[in-house]
Figure 1 (cartoon, rainbow, N blue to C red):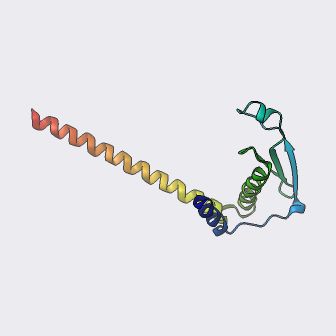
Figure 2: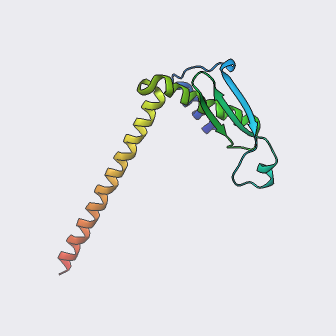
Length: 128
């Protein structure tokens, strides 16, 4: 339960736009993908539409309708925030920061690989 709490704190730390239930259209449809009968015979996939912006989110991450409803609302809230605020959105800033970290990690890995190559070359020269 600790990761859930940390995730909840992380979500709350973002300054997202609030969604009102009056602006949402919700449907329950059959999910798709792997899962066989459990997926094909139950309407536990949630399709959520934000009417003012026209953004649609489809969520079928769990078998529970309630969990899917909650997850769909979180995803929709992030997308609506990104839609209205653009580059000023906390979601956008967080994604940019993660991308920067990823690029830095790749750069360091590449440098380490080059160092290892040079070290092996030096060892080969020392042996000869």
